[in-house]
Length: 91
Image 1: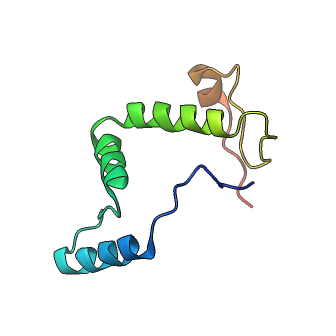
Image 2: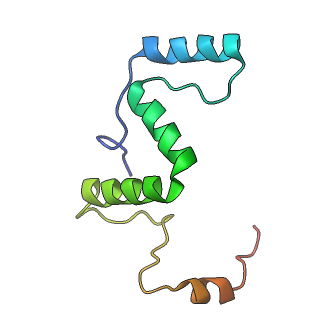
């Protein structure tokens, strides 16, 4: 599976700047761009909104492509059914 088009490329300068800012400020979440800053903010303050936005974008970008084997389909599942399932065995 390719993430081409799903994840925006960012210039190396942005990444280096974020690493330097992180070292200076000792903060864990240092965005590399304004879009990343918005994503971090929404993820902290409205995680369900971010989940819906990411899910919608994923479906739009990968529509028509075969679902990778490592992604499980939850279509037709209810929270009760999922909670009743035994945990997967550890490898």
